[in-house]
Image (cartoon, rainbow, N blue to C red):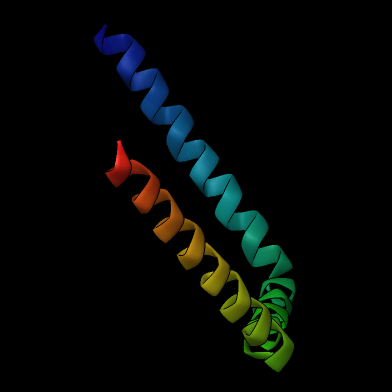
Length: 71
């Protein structure tokens, strides 16, 4: 059992090291993606859509609560 744990730990460390090396090699791409996501999140159209979805979800939750309280 101990041997299996050591093997799994070695695999986890190797996967981590490979993943971080790949991320560093891309470097700039991650920064670009972050800025794109930030721009999309702060967009007025996106804010309006999120507000509408939240309102609809709130109405559905209230409807479900009323349905459950009747039973």
